[in-house]
Structures are given as structure tokens and as C-alpha cells.
Length: 227
Ligand SMILES: C[C@@H](N)C(=O)N[C@H](C)C(=O)O
Ligand SMILES: [Zn+2]
Image (cartoon, rainbow, N blue to C red):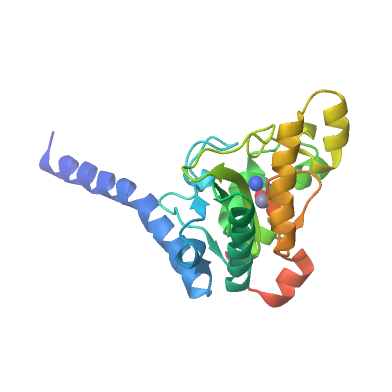
């Protein structure tokens, strides 16, 4: 192979290998520049496993690259610390486990584009329309579960980002009566909602793992969207 082609291939390879890392650094830099807080700097006992930073998520692709830290608006991060404290007071062996926190709009598009087969209304139920912005895009929403202190998630009846009725908090009583969820799964979800509510978070009707610190309108008025 001529010298020039080898040089070109090596340059291309270096470029391709370094791109995801640069992108992830850019995401993190943007979040820090916008004043967001890494929740584990406030409370290292909160567990973090960003699912969109792995391929173990509903689109099967790594969306965040090297970003592994959970960033939130400072006030929201402090609320999460409170929720984790409430949980530990009640169950010293349990911890909150964060699956997603602040999410750039670029990533919101990736999630949105992964559900083209869903009717528009249903699609918006599961993934907020990036044109309007998700509350995650303002660093004011969190996806999370409860885990043992060594990181084993409790049984919530479905996986994270299971888009269907089995994950709907509003359908739990019916799902229990129909034998589709058991008492332990429901009580695990109730515990999560209890500590999150006490810390001021609002659950939603369609996803047991998603909590908002405030409404989208309020987030828009108060904070800058993370592009
Ligand atoms: C995609 C899912 N994890 C999620 O966070 N959905 C809500 C509705 C959102 O995109 O804001
Ligand atoms: Zn969410």
C-alpha cells in the first residue's frame, strides 16, 4: 500500500476513535458551563448508571459516549440528595440509582427518532418532543430506581424505558388485580414515589421511573435549555 494511503487511513482511524470522546467532553462542558451540578459531588452514596451511556437502553445504542455523571440544576440535585436521605433513614441498606438526569436536546432527538412507528400522541407520552424540549433538557427531570447499597436494582415489574401499560403508575391497581404486577413490585414503586414526593418531585402517569422537579413551562422560564 502506498505511503500516502497508509497515512490517510491512520489519520481517519485516529479521528473516528477520538470523536465520541470529544462529543462526550463537550456535553459535560456545556452542562458545567450552564451551572449544573454533578449529584455525586453532593452525595457519593447516590448510585449512577446512565443507561444512555451504554447500549443497554431502548434504542440499543450508546447515545452519551463517555458521559457517565448525572448532572442536574443545583436546586434539583439538592432535592435528590434529600430523597436519598429519606430512603436511607427508612431503609439503611437501600440507595437511589439514577438512570438518567440532564439530557441534551441532541440526545432527545436520538431517542425521539428511535420511535418513528409510534402514533404521534403515544410517541410524546414516552419521549418528549425535542422541538418543545423535555424537562430533562433543562436538568430538572430524573429517571431512577431503588437499588441495594451494592447496586442491585429492586424489582419494579418492568425494565427501565419499558413503554407500555405495565409501567404506568396510574394502572397499578388494575394490573395488581389482574395478576400482572405483584404486591412487592407495587410496594417498591410506592417507596420510590414516597421518597421522591417528600423531596418535592412529581411523578408522571406513564413511567414509574420518571420524576419532574417542576413543570415544563416553569423549567423554560427559569433555566436555559441544554442543546
Ligand atoms: C425516554 C424516557 N426515559 C423519558 O425520559 N421520557 C420523558 C417523557 C422525556 O423524554 O421527557
Ligand atoms: Zn425521564
